[in-house]
Image (cartoon, rainbow, N blue to C red; front, side, top):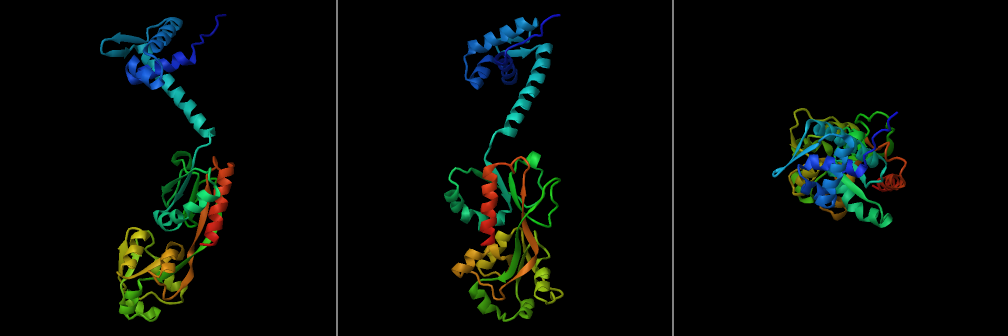
Length: 292
């Protein structure tokens, strides 16, 4: 019984890189070895297999039919090896949340996270919809509880969302608005991500949304909040997004805040849930959310 061929891994890697790069020099640079080392590895591989894999030309190299077949298989195999390494190697956590939460809530608190966990590496991604954890590479996501949960994920409850109407102090003074009923004469700002926010807010205040009211829509909360800040109207927004502006006095909430219909939750990737840094991140987010 003949012994199976056992080409060295270095020889296979040298050949696969040469096939991919199209030349010995390029492969040598990619693998940080000499041109001669690449040549020797491929010559040894060809002698072991008993076939010609590459045709050397002044312009570079050309794969033979056997070489092309081997290169395709090796490329797939090395790709699978890298994927397996990535699956088990600790990588920086990736935290996903909406752009508005990132701008108004998360980024102002990142200094506290770094102070509490100096060694923790966290990448930030914007998003507010569904996630495919296997493809997207996200570790932890802040989402509304109303968004469909990925298969196999158990949401971690965070907080109820408190919502209210805010505006610039000068705009309130000039608007003549004294009570909720007066809002029907004012400019109402809304976001396309929450087109029913005003109706929900009126219901939460046991009031009826005025028929025929026209809303001025913005693509995102952060644009709408900026519009309210410069005196363009009344914005309907979660309290957590405007806390800093309220504290500074650049925005005011004439009718306070009420508990809205939405809740915030955390989704945790199965590949990340057993990691210690994930536990720390989840606990930190939960504590910060509790204090808004």
